[in-house]
Image 1 (cartoon, rainbow, N blue to C red):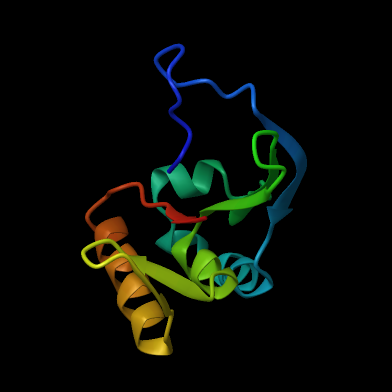
Image 2: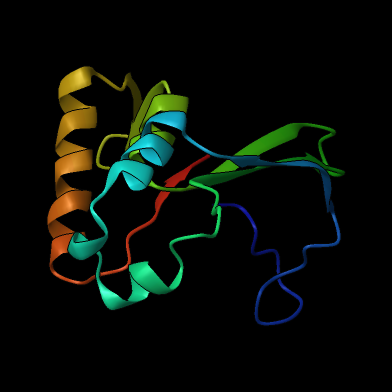
Length: 125
């Protein structure tokens, strides 16, 4: 998504400057985690039960080439889809509103993949 401009294996990131970083904790998800029965926790979840983890991280970046600002978010898709109003369809290069039905499909996919023991992250740009 625009970060490869040549030098190095990860591209030249010198033109991008982090301006601010937000750590987002969803009160709904936190409430669900607190109310979960301790017997229902898996080994990894029980090991980290008392820690407060962020549900999403947002970074505000300034592009020195254009002077434009970028907002990048990564985290739990239930949180990311609440923060993202639109989605990009690559086949025909259009931007469309992210509807409640779209959010439901994304969140159900995350849920199914997590039940299959996959690590899942939603991304928003």
